[in-house]
Length: 113
Length: 113
Image (cartoon, rainbow over all chains, first blue to last red; front, side):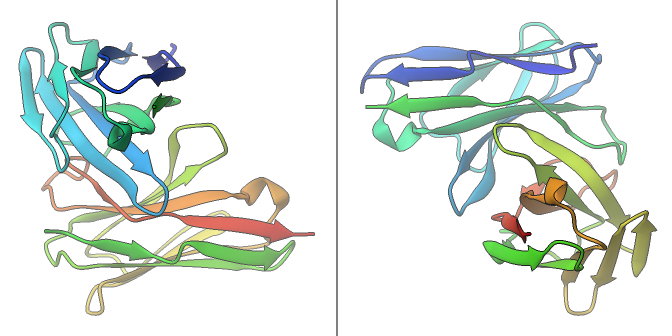
């Protein structure tokens, strides 16, 4: 099993450009999450999904959109990138209603100039 | 909202014990987790403790929970160079533990030879 994979690993954008980050998991997990990690601030939840076709806002959703068209994929979109969105983005997935851990992808480092 | 706090840095000599502390504010936390992040990688679960427990031991790791003071600690015995990483505590108010984790800022553990 590959676990949780993220594409791309690195990306540099100019202000105003758009892009989509792809997260894929092969563990048949119901729940998927997008976090951003900034120095000294830990991980903050952007959006999450409790099943195919459902999404919900997390702590810092502004400027991002998500879609969960297939159970195994969770996409994070930036429609008009801003320098404040420079960060490392992590995707995670988990089973529902269990103490089992969230499994994390390796991260995407995004720089917005 | 929920808040989880940690010191940002800790330096320990190789072979000594490391103690990483965490405080949280949500009294309804049901599960508390410790994650490890190695350079350039995602987060991996180290251990977790249920809120009705005071202590949990797993090989070199000891977790202590003081629910009255909302204080969580992770002790790593006989610290090795491979323990160098950022350690995150996280809490979940969910009944089943892995929903909508709130992470601390992370503590960067540096091992001194």
